[in-house]
Amino acid sequence: MKSPGTLPDQASQVFGDIVTAIPGKGEEGFISATFLRWATGILLAYFGARLLFFALNISSFVPPDEVTHAGICKVFSKVFLLPENSPASYEFGLVTNTAWLYYWIMGKLLNLNIFGLSDLVFLRLLNIPLAFGTVWYALRLLRLLTDNRLAHLLLIVVTTNTPMFSLLSASVSYDNLANLLAAMAIYYEFAFFKKRTGGLLVTSLLCQSAGSLTKITFLPLILVLNILLVLNEAKNLQTVPEEFRRQFRTISRHTWLTLLLLIITAGLNLQLYAGNYLRYGAPNPGMSQVISPVTAMQNGLDARGIIFNQYKEGKISYMDALILTGEIKHPGNKADTFYLLMNYEKLKRNPQLWLSPLNYANAWIQTMAASIFGIRAHLGMFKPPLYLLPVYVIMALALLGFIIRWRPREAGWNPLSLAVVIAFYAGFLVYEVNYDTYLNYGEPTLTVYGRYLFIVMAPVYVLLCHYLLCLFRSEFVRTALALATALVFISYDFPWFLMHATAEWYTWLP
Image 1: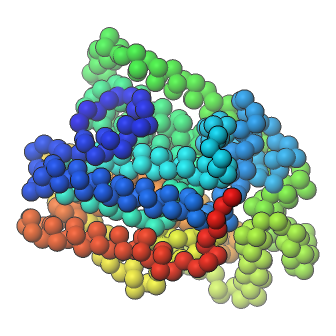
Image 2 (image 1 turned 135 degrees about the vertical axis):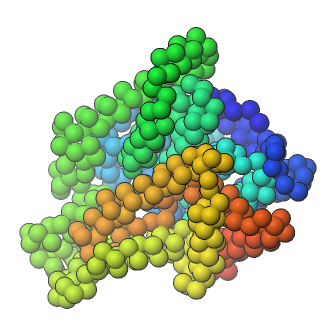
C-alpha cells in the first residue's frame, strides 16, 4: 500500500483503498488476501447500510444537538465566506467567534442539494464519508505497528460496530470532521516518525490546524502531538539542518500546496483564538460575552448556563429560575435545565451528596463506557452494567497484552507514544472539562459523553486490536479471541438498537 505524504486527492478512493490495500507483508497470519478483501467489503457494506438506515429514519431530536448543527450549516450556506451573528442565527448560538470549518464546508455542500432530499437528510448523508475516512486512517495507523491481517479485520469490526460512533456518523455533527482530522493528524505524524518524509509531517500539521478550526477541544490533541514531536526529534537535532535541506530539494508540488494550506489555516486560527482573547478575554467566549445575555437566552444551551449561574449566584430565586427555564424552546435543553436546578437545590440541602474525586472518577468511567457502547443523546439507550463486563474484560486483556508484549527494541516507541496520546487527552478531558463542570453544576454526568473520546478512537482501537492478539502466541487462541470480540461488538451495536428502539426514535423525514 502506498503511503502518500499529502491528503488523498479524492474522497471516493477511501472505500476502495480500504478493501484493496490492507494485505501486508511479513506477519500476515493465516488469513488470505482474498478472504480479507471479501470480509472487509462485507463489513464496510454492512456499516454503510446501517448508516443509511440511521440517516433516513432517526428523529431529528435524537442525535446530540443535531438541530443546532444543521441550523448553523444553513446559516453558512447563505453567505460566501463567514456569516455574522444576527437575529436569524441567535437560536443556534454563535456563528462567529467559534470554530467554523465544519459549518463552512457543510454549508457550501448544502447548496448542491438538487435531489429533492430534506436539508437535514442531505447533511446526514454528507457526514457518512467522514466516518469511512476515520476507519480508513485507523487502519493505516494500525499498519504502522503490524501487518497481521487478523488484527486489521478485527479493527474494522470494532470501529464500525461501536454504537455511539455508528449513530453519530449518520448525524449532523462537527464531531465527525473532528474525528477524521484527528485520525489523520495522528497517522501522518506517526508515519513521519517511521518514514522520515517531510510531506507526512506537513500534512499532520495541516490536519491539526484544520482540526482546531473544527472544534476547540482539538487543541489538547495538538499539544500532546507536538510535545511528542519535539521529544522524538530531540535526538536528531544535529541532523535537522541537513535533513531540512534534503527535504526542501525533493519537495513535491502536492507538499507545497499542503504547506500553503497550513500557513493559511494557521493564520485563521490566530485570527479566531487570538482575536477572541484580545476582544473577550477568552479564546472560546460564551455567547453572552459576545452579545447581550438577554439575546443569548434565545439559544437553549446558553440559556441553560445563564439561568443556572444566575440562580447559583443568588441573582434570581429558585422559582424564577424554573419559570425562565419553561421558556426555553429546545425540549432537550429545557429538560436538562430543570434537572440541573432541582439537583443543585438538593445538593444545597444535603452537601454530603457531593462526590469525592475518587468516586467521581468511578462515575466518569462508568458513564463514558455506557455512552460509548450504548447511546447517549437526547434519548438514551444504555446497557445494564453486567452487559458491559465483556467489554471491560476485552480492554483489560489488551492492556495486559501491552504490558507484557511491548518491548521498545522490537516494536519501537510508537505504541507507547500512542498510549501517551490517549492518556493525555483523556486526562485533560476528565480534569479540565468534566470535573470542572461537575464542581460548577453538581451533576457528575454533565458533559461526560463517550463521543468526546472519539478524537482518540483510532489509537485506542489500534492498540486494543494489536495487543489483544499479541497476548497469546497460539494462532487458534488468537482467532477464537478475535471472533469472541467481534461477536460482542456486532451484537452490541445494531441488533441491540433494533431490539430496544421505541417509536420515539424514528421519524420519516420529509
